[in-house]
Image 1 (cartoon, rainbow, N blue to C red):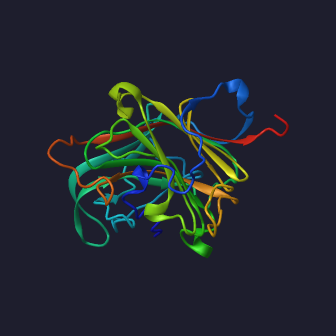
Image 2: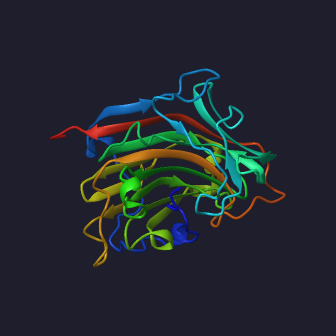
Image 3: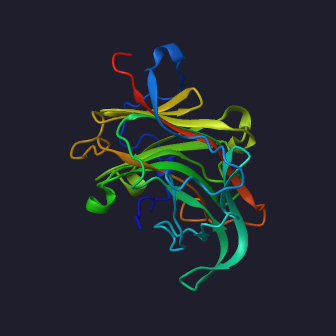
Length: 282
């Protein structure tokens, strides 16, 4: 499996490769591009598995390149659609997977690889994320040429990541050859007044056009990465279709392990995922 997220420090290396990035600002809808819906999952089923025509449930407990502690399962206990949401549940429980290794946590991970990918557009998810030390929820994207070129050549766009010891902070990152791992191009944005992201639903989004990716929390633009501002010798690879990934990791190099303050179960509720293309001339 991809080692696309083997990094511990990228989330605090603000604008590592992009000294000219645009930071947080309110962007009125009238000033933004117009978009046409191309793909969506509204998670309208009740007590069902995610739509198999749209998602593949990944399973395994190999650490996923980050020394994560969970085993991802396809059980309804960990991944199901109910109450108008996709619910990914992280549990503290002894679990022995197909590798016959006991682990202490289970969770869920979904991808659209082989079912849906798109280059450019607006990609957004309305989610209520979990909370607690050692929790690592994410909504992210990988280049669909991963099998051919591997990582980081395929590219990676992390629309949203959060680590439980930073409950107010969303992290945005993109990776490519020469700016991957701890050197990924990255920024972060914290809610004012110490409000936790887990307290409510938020819309996590990117608007991706040739040579530029803009990252939003709700209506706040907090990071703009551009091809032009990559340093010399760094190749821009965000120029082909990417597929979507949703997961809740437990532990790993960046968030560290849960501790006595972490309450289980922890849930990520995804109200919807929507993908759009830009309406030309708008």
